[in-house]
Length: 387
Ligand code: PMP
Ligand code: GLN
Image (cartoon, rainbow, N blue to C red; front, top):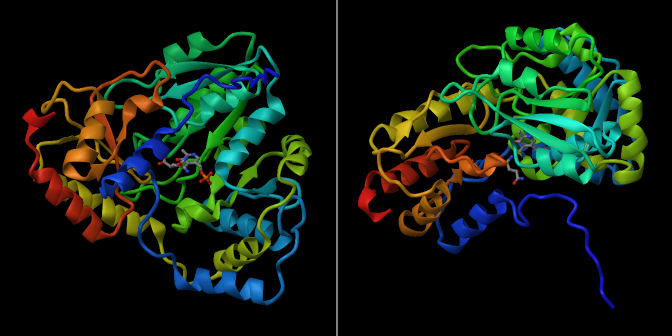
């Protein structure tokens, strides 16, 4: 017997998040690598989950999601963004945003299609494109500012281009798109049939009184967009793995056509808890909480030999350069930092298909203050010659 296992994608067998979190455990290091909070979620939310299960909400939810959750999302978007959504035809609840990204790609891609991906990019995008038989066309963001390189994006588009995927607030750089960026994209895509996937999982985490700009606010683009969200980021419960896809009715229909045979539905008690919590008037503000953590982390890092890049404008992440300290590759540096100094981070080359290495690490600041303090204590003592 010779069992053949097709590779399905060209990326690594083990993601950088698994590699670094495993290494962190192995060396008992402080884990500032994978993006997950180490502080508790609001007890109101935990109680609602408990209550839902006790009240017998333990069976399958409707395929598109619990109506009360879709309704609560529509009201939330109306209140925070003045965006009108039809909960029946435009919102689908999913088991996380990663799944929603895959499903949206699957709904639109055929073999031979191309998808433009701006790099550095979240690691699931390119494998998801390849798993659907299509080809990713990576286009680097501009150095230092990580702004879109419109000339290069334009040059990457041709008759095979089926979609472009955008991520704002951006993982890993912490940059955000402004309305002007969406307008530029609208100009570029006018008279084409190119779809947009807009990954907006960090939309509630935009700092310094700036506003999140959604593709949903650009009418020309909204018509062609699948917009992906995750509750995990807003409510610090990444392990619940619940997200949603917002798209116009015909696109949502195509999305649900696949979703009904992939997962069919999503954890009922958690959907119930999220619906109740979304309608709660006394919710914690994730923006302020995370902005304070970013400020705290940036301040502490001044005591170390690392150089911070521009302050994160959104997300869980801050980029930091070690270029003045070592010539080691970012992968080797991150590994040694975990093993010798007990602090785990993510090397940014993992977010580039050509493994581009600018000697930059990503730190996750979505942690308790004491965790950040302890980590920076360790980083202060670094001897650059040990790398
Ligand atoms: N997109 C980005 C940019 C992310 O950082 C993450 C992190 N988890 C996801 C999508 C996936 O979200 P989820 O955990 O809901 O699958
Ligand atoms: N979104 C998280 C991050 O960027 C990781 C999620 C995962 O482990 N796949 O760190």
